[in-house]
Length: 209
Ligand SMILES: Nc1nc2c(ncn2[C@@H]2O[C@H](COP(=O)(O)OP(=O)(O)OP(=O)(O)O)[C@@H](O)[C@H]2O)c(=O)[nH]1
Ligand SMILES: [Zn+2]
Image 1: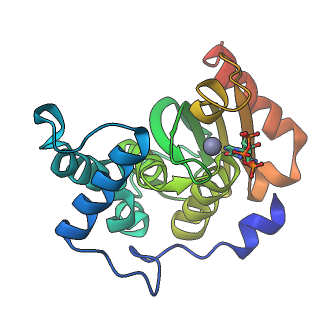
Image 2: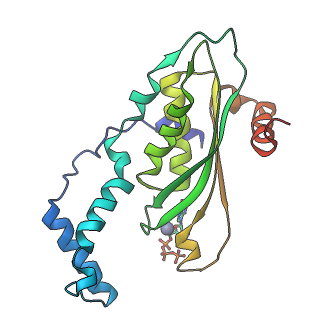
């Protein structure tokens, strides 16, 4: 995990060298997929579907047009000296697996140890959203959230735990419902300290009780 975190460079909105197709090209591609299912794209109920799918894709994959660095740039230093752990837990997300382009549905838990400044809590949620709204593996998404917060906010450490169900496992292939995949990424003080990791995990599990 460490190697992934160190290699990651916050991504520019579009992948370099990728040019977006035209609306007509996307709609034609959706008509092709409809024919691949065995249905008829010319029947009435499917006539507007290519347009709807193109619009839905722009929304579900809107993370390529968003920059997490911007959101994390707005910080506050007036915290009355608070330097304890901050955790935003149970952040629901929907992503899509990069292998099958079907949903990954889960929750992210993100914690950090401030170093003189904190960030708006909604910005942590936005970072999760931005990486979720891209084609992903769960491991990559976990590492991207941790390393982006570490690199931009520069706290003493970041902890990310993601638990998710992959529809490519539930709906097709092995067709196993209800399995949950857990991934975690730790940077800074969390990376070096099993006690800090355990404290994060306990607070996520028990809400700090
Ligand atoms: N590591 C990892 N694997 C994932 C993730 N999402 C899906 N996968 C797996 O990616 C693998 C792709 O395997 P392949 O053998 O290339 O593709 P496939 O023939 O469709 O595989 P099956 O799903 O086993 O039918 C599968 O084992 C999926 O379960 C993820 O987020 N992380
Ligand atoms: Zn998949």
